[in-house]
Image (cartoon, rainbow, N blue to C red; front, top):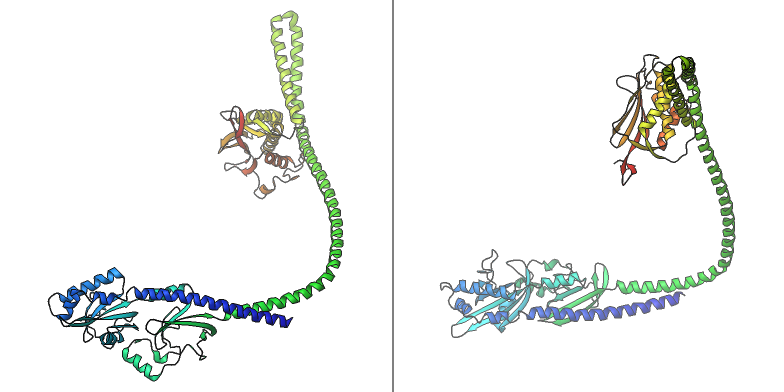
Length: 578
């Protein structure tokens, strides 16, 4: 298995290297054409520009008025139209007479470039070219020169164009390619890798260092301190940040070479990954053979576990069903108990009102008996008085009927659904029910009715019970014969407030938070069950309202029932006010 993995890794190494070499060849061809095309754009510009009469005039008679200025402006215009970086004219001694950057602070005009190879080669052969770092601007560029000759005028000079090849470097860097261009001395002057620039491929000889120093081609590059790139002495391997790389090159343009490199780590990674995958596949095959033996046992174990889990789920489901059923029964019992407590509180209130009710009914009965007796005597003696006495007896009967009707309505159980209820009617009925108790205490409750007939969503009897409880508490809290109890109804902010206020001693502050607790009462020896406010609080919450218990700033206690106010909209339908 190990041998197979190593063989597959070696095969992947060779295949990846072949693919990398082919890619290098293609990239080398494209890059070569790109740089050659860029140079060819300006190759003949110095020779063509040197044929202009303004250039000849500047060479033949530099001191003539306007000659140099005309040449400067001509060169500036040529650079603008062609896109070259600089274009300038040297005289026979290498002194710059005119330049396209004549108006800039770093103008070439007046500088001596006789030491430059492009000047000496153009003087000797008619043309020259060199890549160098500018001694004036410090910016590198490719300098192409052409000799300007006119025997008739005695003109002899050199026209030079400077080309910026920096965009090519930037394009190579953006694509992630490792490309470099070396001169005839194998010094890298263009490269997508900043660390390669101005470094020789191999150590330079003393003669080469001396010649490059004299021509100042790489004036600020410090070639003496630059380390060679080919540290292994081979043209096929190059150290790039500590990693070996494949190097390919092709010669062109004045002894230059275009080099392109790609790191070897992808091939090594492919070989390692392939060997690892083959080894892993073998180990996986062995593992699968072992796993297959355990699979059946695991499946059987899982089936047994599934069966056990299903049995537990069925048991738990049955338990939950029983718990839900028991909870439903408990909730039903609680609702029944609550209804019973409400009814019990009603009966307790009726019991407390019984003495007053007996007095309220016995008085009309006694008066009716006396009236009927008087009517019997006057039937033969004064028939005209008989009708008035019978009418008085009928009024007493109606009074007793109203009382018994209120008692009957108060004592019955009400269905749960809520409906729009006229609040003023409920308030008057509650006042009628508490009137015997109030008369017994010598109190006349006041009723402050609203202007209209507001409606709330509630239960008629339950709301009546709440008001009766609040009125009874207020009557019991005041001094008999001198107390004041007021039931007021007012609207505020889309809500209706039914407030019962008394002028009694009020409620102690420490007791206020416990007023709605069941079976809590501040009355010593009271007849009630201590459920009045607790039931009232629960009933008001069922109506969607709230119960506000507080001491009034002017004295006494005030308990308010606050409910959402209904408005009549859409053809008689009642909706909550906004």
